[in-house]
Length: 98
Ligand code: SF4
Ligand code: SF4
Image (cartoon, rainbow, N blue to C red; front, side, top):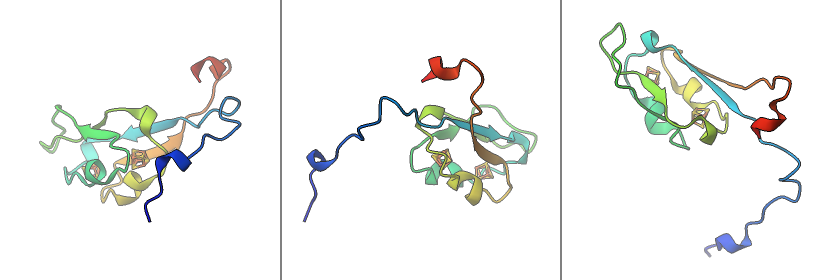
């Protein structure tokens, strides 16, 4: 049985609650260019950079941080610990950033 997307609904408090925003930190010089993070990110947040790192590798860069769900999979799968993902800390007045 295939469930129709019409059955999906928007939570009632969507207007009141803002989704946490991601802060993705990439340390380009630690990257060895395996591309696991780019290939396996479920939201396709990362893409290949056009800047070579010290190892002569094109590391990943963030294509669209707003799509990140902070699942942490890229950080977990990176063999060289070159990526970390945290929730962006809300500064005073960040209500406007919603
Ligand atoms: S998983 Fe790590 S080592 Fe592999 S491309 Fe991504 S940042 Fe580089
Ligand atoms: S935390 Fe998840 S969604 Fe965000 S960039 Fe990493 S793998 Fe993609």
